Length: 396
Image (cartoon, rainbow, N blue to C red; front, top):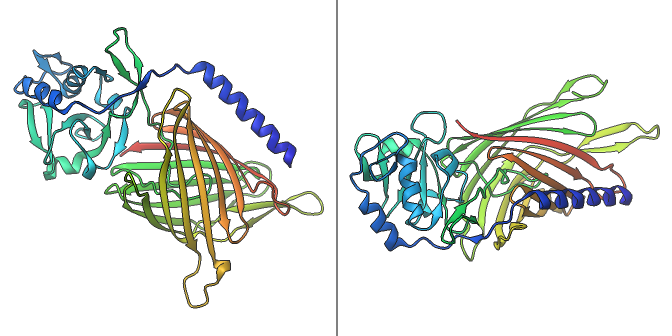
């Protein structure tokens, strides 16, 4: 078993080396937006007529306007609103500050409009009807179409041709999911987003997981297990499992993000009988849990990105007979590497089995990723269960 773990660590090291050679070096971190310069820039373009594809003071579309304003900050944004949505750090809409970008779904097909937050629930944007103007975005029209907010300050950039040009690069791939290998996180899906993943394990089972977000704080999910999709054993279908999570506290400088959830999902264990055949057994259900998450490593150089710790406590039974065996604790750490890779280590089910799991997630695009994980490491009674998961994250 130890030999298998060593092999996996060697593979991880080789993958890191390959990606290190293939990834460009970022030059630094974008500093805080100059709000005085931002106000002067936006006021200068007020009344500029709307022109589809416009990028000059003679005519601007929504992303052309944001591109021009940020260029005067020395920051080069991608050209379209959908590409700009992949830059910067996601921030709660109720915690935006001047300079943050607000994104909307105005055509029913994902990000199609962008504006710049100013203050007091106002944004400045290029309206297709009135040109560049200030607008209150807390109206029914905009709230129904709001997708989210991004903060460009604090994201990474590469050096442009001029010394003053900072080209913002994609920093948020689909790394944050409702659960890591098995440990739940505080992350909930953004409003108008849908999450779908497919996971297969060493015995050929296929788990299909989905979730949908509401109000940027609540999401509801369901999981379907199809047994022995791969292999020559009989196909079986398990009873669907459900989960719900509510994030009631966003992370601050001195306190963690916090969420409460419930899931009747279980983790399957794999062992061998005397004949060497696989034996599968369901673990204990997750039950009710409380989880907190805190960013522990914010410095972003060209190799290492953000790191975050999750710690939680839960029970799969709530009544007068609840004992320590029904209570569990979990802790996990995720470390972003080279912007597209996430390394995960976790200890789940503390107080009971104390399962040790590790995983690596690699993003293909801004909405899809693949993950390889191993569960039940260093355990005598269970085999290491290897799993492959494909995830998709998109606006509906």
